[in-house]
Image 1: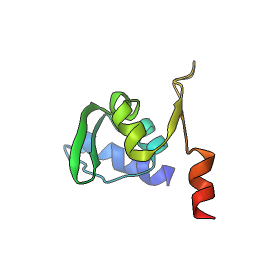
Image 2 (image 1 turned 90 degrees about the horizontal axis):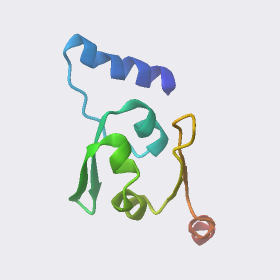
Image 3 (image 1 turned 90 degrees about the vertical axis):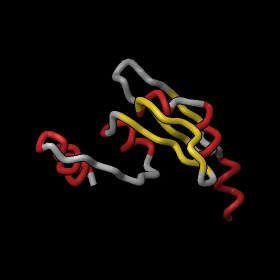
Length: 88
Protein backbone atom coordinates (compact mmCIF):
# COMPACT_ATOMS: atom_id res chain seq x y z
CA UNK A 1 0.00 0.00 0.00
CA UNK A 2 2.79 2.43 0.86
CA UNK A 3 4.70 1.53 -2.30
CA UNK A 4 1.59 2.22 -4.37
CA UNK A 5 1.12 5.59 -2.64
CA UNK A 6 4.75 6.48 -3.36
CA UNK A 7 4.17 5.74 -7.06
CA UNK A 8 0.84 7.56 -7.11
CA UNK A 9 2.11 10.71 -5.45
CA UNK A 10 5.08 10.84 -7.81
CA UNK A 11 2.77 11.32 -10.80
CA UNK A 12 2.35 15.11 -10.34
CA UNK A 13 6.08 15.41 -11.00
CA UNK A 14 5.23 14.12 -14.47
CA UNK A 15 2.51 16.76 -14.90
CA UNK A 16 -0.36 14.45 -13.97
CA UNK A 17 -3.24 15.22 -11.60
CA UNK A 18 -4.37 12.75 -8.95
CA UNK A 19 -7.91 12.50 -7.67
CA UNK A 20 -8.39 9.80 -5.05
CA UNK A 21 -11.24 8.74 -2.79
CA UNK A 22 -9.55 7.54 0.37
CA UNK A 23 -10.87 6.66 3.81
CA UNK A 24 -7.52 5.88 5.41
CA UNK A 25 -6.90 9.14 7.24
CA UNK A 26 -3.31 8.20 8.07
CA UNK A 27 -2.45 7.77 4.40
CA UNK A 28 -4.22 11.00 3.51
CA UNK A 29 -2.20 12.77 6.24
CA UNK A 30 1.07 11.32 4.99
CA UNK A 31 0.67 11.66 1.23
CA UNK A 32 -1.77 14.35 0.15
CA UNK A 33 -1.40 18.12 0.12
CA UNK A 34 -5.06 18.97 -0.42
CA UNK A 35 -8.27 17.34 0.76
CA UNK A 36 -11.95 17.78 0.08
CA UNK A 37 -14.04 16.30 2.88
CA UNK A 38 -17.38 14.88 1.78
CA UNK A 39 -20.00 13.81 4.31
CA UNK A 40 -23.50 12.79 3.35
CA UNK A 41 -22.80 13.81 -0.24
CA UNK A 42 -21.99 17.38 0.80
CA UNK A 43 -18.65 19.20 0.83
CA UNK A 44 -17.89 19.86 4.50
CA UNK A 45 -14.33 21.15 4.21
CA UNK A 46 -11.77 21.88 1.51
CA UNK A 47 -8.17 22.97 1.88
CA UNK A 48 -4.73 21.82 2.95
CA UNK A 49 -5.06 18.11 3.83
CA UNK A 50 -3.62 18.37 7.31
CA UNK A 51 -5.88 21.29 8.17
CA UNK A 52 -8.95 19.44 6.86
CA UNK A 53 -8.03 16.21 8.67
CA UNK A 54 -7.67 18.06 11.98
CA UNK A 55 -10.98 19.91 11.54
CA UNK A 56 -14.06 19.36 13.64
CA UNK A 57 -15.86 18.45 10.40
CA UNK A 58 -13.48 15.51 9.83
CA UNK A 59 -13.80 14.35 13.44
CA UNK A 60 -17.57 14.37 13.10
CA UNK A 61 -17.67 12.76 9.63
CA UNK A 62 -15.34 9.89 10.55
CA UNK A 63 -16.34 9.80 14.25
CA UNK A 64 -12.71 9.76 15.33
CA UNK A 65 -10.53 11.38 17.93
CA UNK A 66 -7.22 12.86 16.87
CA UNK A 67 -4.00 12.81 18.87
CA UNK A 68 -1.24 15.07 17.61
CA UNK A 69 0.42 16.31 15.65
CA UNK A 70 3.38 15.16 17.68
CA UNK A 71 6.98 16.29 17.61
CA UNK A 72 7.58 14.10 14.56
CA UNK A 73 4.59 15.64 12.76
CA UNK A 74 2.58 12.42 12.91
CA UNK A 75 -0.96 11.98 14.19
CA UNK A 76 -3.12 9.15 15.46
CA UNK A 77 -6.74 8.82 14.38
CA UNK A 78 -8.68 6.63 16.82
CA UNK A 79 -12.17 5.23 16.75
CA UNK A 80 -14.00 5.43 20.09
CA UNK A 81 -14.28 2.02 21.78
CA UNK A 82 -18.06 2.29 21.79
CA UNK A 83 -18.08 2.36 17.99
CA UNK A 84 -16.38 -1.05 17.90
CA UNK A 85 -18.77 -2.43 20.49
CA UNK A 86 -21.79 -1.37 18.42
CA UNK A 87 -20.73 -3.84 15.72
CA UNK A 88 -20.18 -6.82 18.05
